[in-house]
Length: 327
Image 1: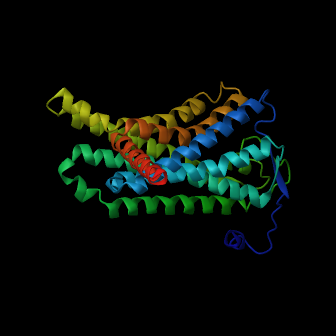
Image 2 (image 1 turned 60 degrees about the horizontal axis):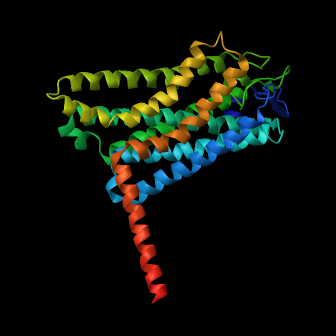
């Protein structure tokens, strides 16, 4: 972070507060019931994503490029929920609204990195479906293990780099007025708007982040499914079209769960109450990690078969052990 400051001159002094105050849920009535709900969401999310990762790891048949992306999505969802929800509960449920300057920037970095990776995983899965349906004969040549691992690694590198730059730009800001963040976590937009010096670089980066992490991925996914729809329209029979489209239902469900709440919140931002906006955005952050593993287990035939096979092996092993003990 010192590189950002030294580039501006050694004599510049930035006013950095000892702490920020997170005030997002403080004005919402009966909010404790929502905290109980968040605890439930986090437990289901942690268990569900752990199960998905374990199933993919244990079943050799699922070690395909597509399920590398699914494994990474479950991994990111688990880390993202663990970075956000426990800290959120600590802040509001136990009334620890004061968060130190460095802790707030760290909280922001990890939250944004994992949220960004959720979107990038949707891009990887979208590309996988595009090639599988439009170029089925060349699928294994174009989407192999090396390609998928390289794609995911590049997404990780990009997300980390962008968020490091965002944190670095925040360290250039002076906070000589309010230190109250009107959000449920250390939100980038809320932080840089509190600055009393020029926050133009952070504002520009915020606009770029919205474009690179929300609008461009959504546009790519929509374009992908327009191409898939066009390709399926050329398929001879309705049964073949249905069978091909069925392989996309899990991914389409993930896209809808992630983007629809955000689009509704931001398109209705002028007419929505601030408390409702905070609740909607927090749900958009914690709901996808909970629902993603449920959707993949229920809608993906390979994972359902794998879960049944693993459970059957475990039950048979337990029965054998019991027979040995009885003998």
